[in-house]
Amino acid sequence: MPNIVYIATSIDGFIAKKDGGIDWLFEVPNPDGSDFGFSGFINNIDAIVMGRNTFELALRFGDWPYNKPVFVLSKTVKSVPNNLEDKVEILNQNPHAIVKELNSRKYFNLYIDGGKTIQEFLKHELIDEIIITRIPILLGEGIPLFDVLNKEQKYEHIKTDIFNNALVKSHYRKLRN
Amino acid sequence: MPNIVYIATSIDGFIAKKDGGIDWLFEVPNPDGSDFGFSGFINNIDAIVMGRNTFELALRFGDWPYNKPVFVLSKTVKSVPNNLEDKVEILNQNPHAIVKELNSRKYFNLYIDGGKTIQEFLKHELIDEIIITRIPILLGEGIPLFDVLNKEQKYEHIKTDIFNNALVKSHYRKLRN
Image 1 (tube, helix red, strand yellow):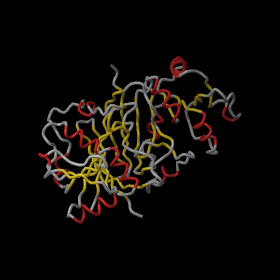
Image 2 (cartoon, chains in turn green, orange):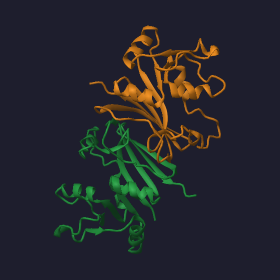
Image 3 (cartoon, helix red, strand yellow):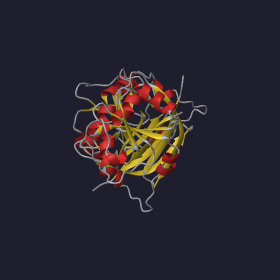
Image 4 (cartoon, each protein chain N blue to C red):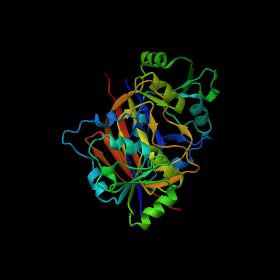
């Protein structure tokens, strides 16, 4: 029942610029329009867990971009737009309770998305796999993927794929003691 | 005339624990005693540029670990131990002046080492290549490789090698505008 992070960062570990900008993600030449394995990943996911920031970003895409149930962690958001009522649910619980709740509803493979949500799940040692794609840029500043952890966490390297001789996508699985 | 960074970091971008500890670097199983390509790298280097911290760490190794000329950037260190007088020189100049000075002395391929020194050279846009090896661990806190930069820097991905199905070593070259 893995909780999986799937995310892209700069070489220096940022997931977005200070203003949230992610234009630099799309500057890598991609003549074949590859999704770099994302659809294969999302097909194996039962549900997506994200924070409010990521949710609000997704709302701005126009068409709703996800074909899996989305659970938004928020203390402040109370409702979702009418057209998303069967696609999105707001949850206001701690990470352990959320995983327990979703697992009880038969959502086992969870895609954990959004900077703060990922950090919160990592702090609770609730991330089982990290799939991280490094973009060949130093942003210099921005929104970091990782935050302070109370103790180190060891992972095993599953595989690394290179896309367009530019993106380095590494798949890690947490080692359980 | 490249200035090259060759360094290992945790997945979350630390080069050492808060106390400077690097024991976690050596926890990856290495039955063949591989140096993961380091000797090939160092053979092509003309000189090593490092900060005081890295120098003092190297002094603690007992045997002097470098077979190339070492230049230590320091405002405070004024002299080196007698036995290293022909191997180590102290420099107290800014990064541009140091590169100019060393190039004029026919040292062209410079290995830039040590957290603060690397950060200083990156700020001055003086790093041409970054060879970064990711260790499969989240340290959670420690001494970061990267610091804030005034502006982004784009790189091209040269290659990535995987060692012992654990280490992900990526070689990047700075794109010049």
